[in-house]
Image (cartoon, rainbow, N blue to C red; front, side):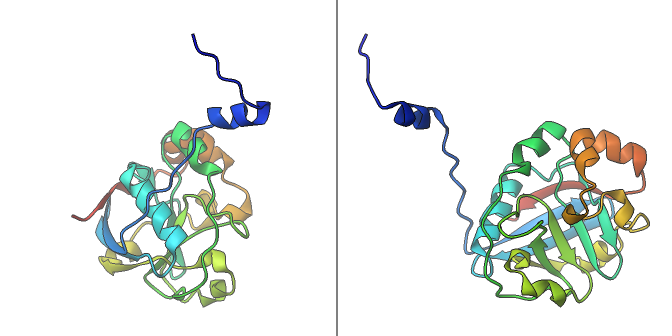
Length: 202
């Protein structure tokens, strides 16, 4: 047996797996199938490279499949991005990405990651259904895509619960959603529309 000697810190680092983010194409489309119909998001990496790469990775991994549109405020936004599987949601919750500089604006149809402050974007995404340009002052809300088909579907997703069915990340009321997944959401908020699956359009 050959024994290899190394400094303690180096040995420890060799045991830690390295996560390699998948670089997204310069532009790509994602079809989102929901219980209310389907819509298509067109992503442009030049608008927000970190955001585009993360969204591409999550869609490719099936992270969004079988989840819920848990924060729908008509005329403001539609939010999704907490996996219906608690183990999967916990795995990604703290895997944050760096902010992107603002290129596009938070106008109806544009898509961006939610956050709790600088460099805290992870998995939660919102679609602007109103003029939210007040968010433009923070780089963390940099849109990475735009709904190019099916905006009428986005606008008819169930919004009767408003902020009560989970609220935004900054409200600090999402722990039950992460812990309980779809079982919790379907029990407490049964009228929420479902995100059935999201796929890269070939």
